[in-house]
Image 1: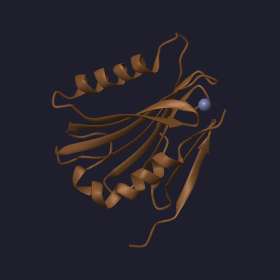
Image 2: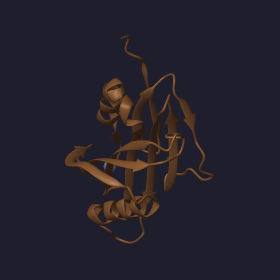
Image 3: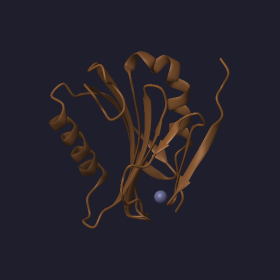
Length: 159
Ligand SMILES: [Zn+2]
């Protein structure tokens, strides 16, 4: 299989690679250094970069708990499949794989399972929480494994 070219999405101190053929979607009204979300959409696979500045001091654990609670609320069949601790640009990061049912953004129109891969970290210089996620139909995981790896390996926090 021919490897697709990746481009680099670089904005507000964050940089991440994405396959060149994907569509870029910015649906938030306000994308600033403080908060924003940008998506890149392939075929049945979605990548997103989400960042937000926090005024109150909360830990990465608390932030992650909040993310998981919200997902659980949205979906009773929510499942946390894997969790590991990693590092992104010197920041401690959580990498998680989860599964939900039904539609999730642009993915999963057939009400089947949707797999979500998250990488969450906190930048203490910018006081921002950053989440990079890749959601896809689980049956495509093998085919897209190198894309997921390449996206996650490319995440850079420029501080
Ligand atoms: Zn940083």
